[in-house]
Length: 359
Image 1 (spheres, rainbow, N blue to C red):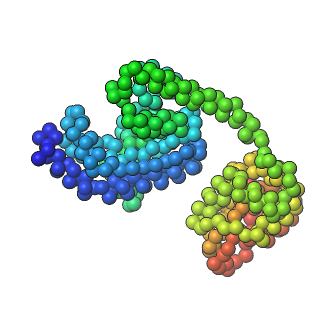
Image 2 (image 1 turned 90 degrees about the vertical axis):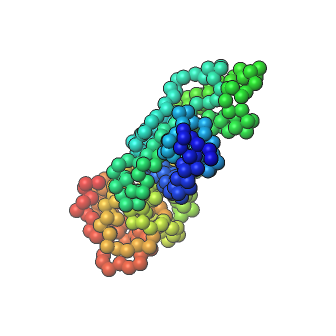
């Protein structure tokens, strides 16, 4: 029987067999949490993927480890998660989320300014050994994950491409790569590193333009068709619609009549073009969510099967009402617009006029 430091290897692998389903559940939960955290506070990412080491891979890892392991938990990367960002500069933002939302058991940090040495083989990425925060482990759905770790790797898309090419070529270490080609291969790595840096600089340069540039159709008048395009393509609308629907745990669904009412509401408030609406969305993002949260909270006894797609734009109208000189008149007009498909409703829309000044 094979042994690792006089401990039967099969005993450690038996422990893996017993916990394999738990590892898979843990991996799925961590991927879901990371997706939620990054969607809420991070940049868009290329991919978030998880995997659990196969039994044979765990066995090879146990035999190769020095010093020899005495238990399965000595293998820190049985659960692995890889986050691939579009730009190297976004790795820092993902790192901040990981360090805030997980317990870091050990961290391998690589200086962003560290250049690839010509003799260094491979491309840089960051690795974190993480487990769940203690307060999260107190929740009943997470208690069973106590003591389980995952290795989270964060790298840019170009770093990821380089690493995948290495694997495909079968050379993943300096020692196995022919010496006469090593420098040539390292030069390619340096070019990719330079490309990452240049993309970062271009992205930084373009950021002010992204914040002020409107969509190609921004000068079009608002009607049900152009408003539908805004609802489907504008990131602020889709993000706020998702957050508002999550408050009631219901989906957002399209409704043509609701679009027509929104166009009428916006026109009543002087918003008649796509450009004007997009500008108001940018200026009022925080107040839209605040107003929507208050109204939906006051509607908590109303049972909705869904909310209409573009619900956040209705709350743009409420935000505009808050700064108008015709508050009561506008509120009376707006409160005639339904917010979604109801299962039942036993009372009138609540009077929110008293609180409009707080918005």
